[in-house]
Length: 331
Image 1: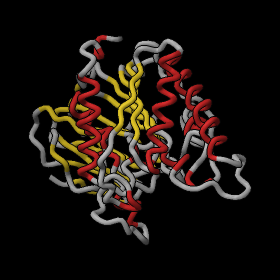
Image 2 (image 1 turned 45 degrees about the horizontal axis):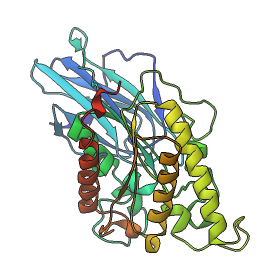
Image 3 (image 1 turned 120 degrees about the vertical axis):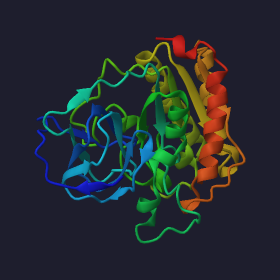
């Protein structure tokens, strides 16, 4: 089974799908010997999965029509996953089509939804690499959101999911004080140009999983940054993170919220994230939990979680989700 660039006589619809947050994916069901999909733009790696079986990844595919053919006439399902991060610019997917005379089928709706919010640890930054050194584009080629814990957890529950994460971004401070929107500033928008706010009435996640703070605290403060002391940074982080969690609760009044953190930065990240969750619980939110996830090896690019770490994180989150036997009944 191969994915090939091919001319197509099938008619595509007029709607394109533009996305910039990681973890985008597209699904369809059909009956027939072939299916086509169209790539409009994007510097990306795509995973194409047909009936649960992956094909070879498409690395930086050229715009155009691609075909998966030579199939039986039975029912098939196809998934196209964007594995890479797209901070530099959005990707556009042109949809699916089938040969004239073949039949489109309806996908069974998934009743479970999970949202993952975070930074490079949530993105799957460099996760495929077996070493820390990743020069000359190796971070990009080894980044794979499909191998990260979010996708693992979603597959476990057969859930639709969103990954709202940007590498290098924090709650109030980006990595090493670098410029750019923080994650809470970027979060409300469909694209990073902040031209259109995200608002989808159908998106009602029963679980939100959040991990923020690595970039706020993993480097020393630099001259010229607005916080003169670590205590000032802590106070700003706690107040801003607390407002962000309160806003998320307003948007998702019935969801379970899980905040997790590692013991990196001599435990500073974990201590600060735990403090924010405790404050939120004191404000009367009983459906928020803090989960420390320690003992990770960080063997991938630039000391990021490895494939083994991703499975460790996923297993710990699954235990936490399973602890609430009513979680999937909340909507």
